[in-house]
Length: 304
Image 1 (spheres, helix red, strand yellow):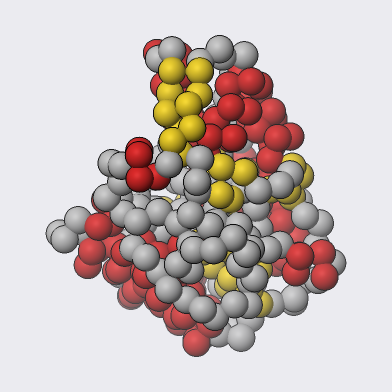
Image 2: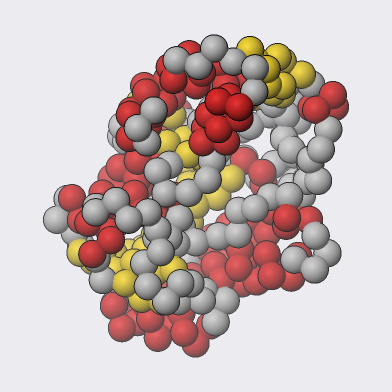
């Protein structure tokens, strides 16, 4: 199959391209930078065909994707800086990328009759309660700009196309970019004690594992909404940090605090990021490995 992948300068796009190429698919990557700007790790994505593309430019999107004429588009490009999205001078730009850019991609997919995969987030819900969110739940109630614009992107895809996968993920980490694990490792090496919130519950998602699932999905016609994070049980950020330090051999003390005690966050964060992933198995897909296993592999990958 031939794929067009947006956001290859980011954590997920990098891993998706590598997974596609590993399986013998053809892939063209894109991002806003003039040339591939992700981690120079010598992996196949660094040498793969690349198109510089601003997804908010409707005509450019149509031209770039039409020229490739792919069987499927995996749309990883997004504005993901959750707190910065709340700045009054950023809201229009965030919406232009997450909603407008996604609509632009969906419109071309419709014209070309190709599959589209859109990566979304539990932030489309209100993050309350303790019940895991089901993929086909329509009780949308985003609590911040990021969640609202990602929901608008979901609706753009679902209202434009029939051949789509909308995959919601949470607590993402990967080789190619900043993430919670890298932050906590850096803090743990310079502090004796760290305070981490213990009342926001979810599960991490390793982009390397997710990429495999996304390619599995695109090799089928089992369209629809899905939830995908690593297995291993629901945890808090506090639990996650303790395991990061344990596996990395750091002796830093981790203190649990509530979201209210921690403060500092401009955007409202969900307390309940539990995602129900049972639909993956129902549709015959292989779930992701446990987050503990993923963390161990990731720490090796980044040389910890």
